[in-house]
Amino acid sequence: MENILLRRIHRKIYPYLNALRTFHAEAEGEYPKSNGNIMDKEKKRHPYRKIHPWKSTYGFNESLINSVLYNEDGLVAINKPYGISSRTPKPNEIQVNKLPSGIPNAVDYTVADALPVIADRLGYKSLTIIKTPEKFTSGVVLLGASPQIKTAVEKSMRIAEGARILPRTFWAVTRQVPKQLEGESRVAMTLNRVKERKRPVPIIINTWSANARERGDIKILNVQYKVLSHGTYNVASLVEIKSSTTVWHAVRLFAATVLLSPILGDNIYGSRVQNVLGKRLLVNVAVDAAHIPPTLDPDLLTVLKIGKNKDLMIPVHMHLREMYLPSFLRKKNNVVIQAPLHPEFLWTCRQCEFDEKIFENIPSDSEVEHKSLEKRTAVT
Image 1 (cartoon, one colour):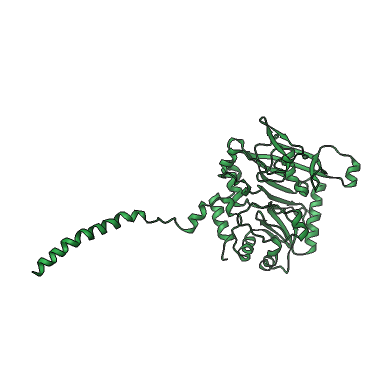
Image 2 (cartoon, one colour; image 1 turned 90 degrees about the vertical axis):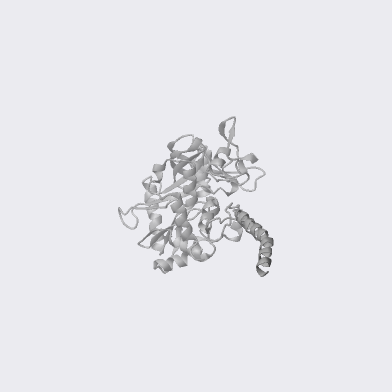
């Protein structure tokens, strides 16, 4: 009797258990799949979103220490990241130079903030900034352990000027291809006062008087330039530019108004050149169109994987690649300091399919990004 009852119960509940088991087997595919570890997610983020990854001043300081390029005779050089100021601006400077960085999760750390840590780690009592590119230019920053080192750097740069050597070498990614692939220019910059604009705007002129130079109305700009490569569909070029000065964003100004090939990401002078009936023409600085963010080539945006209305996050692609200091501290002691490209810059170069031979001695973008990410996010 007991066995009969058990068989009846089993017959009633078996279909239910079987259906329940089948349901779970079918539902298994509905469970969310793993998206991989955090590094997999990190790789999927656009490189322009990883320019400022630091979560604390400690991580930032460590990244600058890891970027030391030169340390000898009291002269230290580091590779400044993009979007980092040399010092905290004064209140009046913040109003004058307040421009949106476009950097996702931008930080306000400065090189000056990290100097005590860098000095301590390298065994110096203190370090001061001697030469540095502006906030939106990455690359070589020169630091000195004493006033004598600063004097020696300035003397070395005067020696270079006397020998007609341009000590600063920039690498820039420009939009389209410059009208001339290589050359030298000696021009002058002056401030042009435009009605309805509060501040005068810099322009480049080809002729000037001796009196104008004596009065300080102009600033001489000597430039040597060479197109290193132009890539996919000629939407961009990698250009080497040597400049005698950087005042008034001279390199940007020269690229836009002389080469007719503005630097990628430049929203200051990027609209000085407009395409009119298929030709690149300079726009008069009195026209409002010369002072608004430029409209970028859709093909270029596709190459850079930038979506609609996201172009403001494109960084200014200008990097102080090299500083040359002839006879530094002693005769024939010629110091050459080179700064590797940062991951976002190198990624752009490879997206644009610039000549790979240029980057033979530079690690692959994945290696650079991975190592840089490890350094820049180390222990927050």
